[in-house]
Image (cartoon, rainbow, N blue to C red; front, side):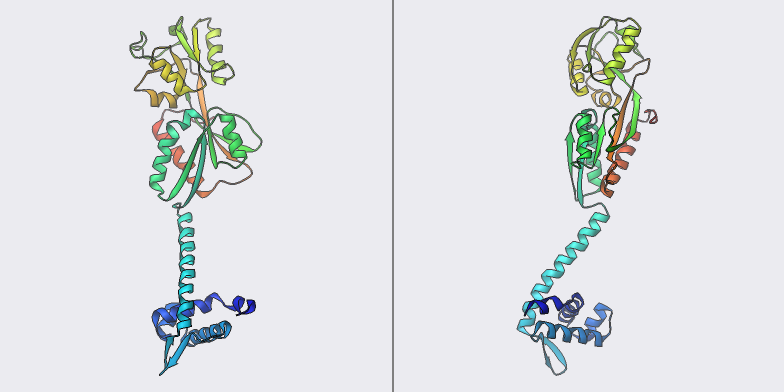
Length: 309
């Protein structure tokens, strides 16, 4: 058949053809399609005219598929199976059981909190696949701007014209000590308690470092600055092995509480975490559902967190 004939075959004709073979009579085919019997007969006649050969033998008032009709039926079945898969995929996407989720996070959130949250989310939405990237906050923002991830989680507020930044967690930093430390029995640690202590810091360019150093300078309290690391998780390991004491964010301290002694610190120095989304492109339904899930888990795990400013 020529191109005109190929293009003239309509989906409704193929539905009638398929229904007639599956149900074997025009009456039952019409019931399957919820149309009249004459409509089925007309669709079959039109299809035969379009393809240019007989699809059924008409014997004693009954229709029997011709060999050519059965060959065509096999192809139609494959096509309808593909349509069923498309419909099924659409339903899975709608019900958040299909799709890809790309998350990027700063280490303080992405080493422990985000993997645990992501696992719970995947349990509730089987069938999705996920990617978790761990980068510095500035790179997380670049990934969101470049559409290489759906949403990002950063460890301190930054500004960028291409993204929306929403504070999702703000809480006082914690003091961490090695087990057996002389201050381990104190309920609250103050700057005066840490006079002369070996201290592990963030790098000088970090906002938290500037806040901490400013507080100790204001009170004229000297520490022994022994080590630096940009990763709060690495600082925890240094403290665990006795390299010194430190101030870190509440989330990292929560996951390190079995390895180090975690104490409240006063006066309050806040650490803040924020959600990053593109202001050029809306997040997918799947990414939006993950954000809601992550926020609810944050509230459950850190009920003492101050409300975002």
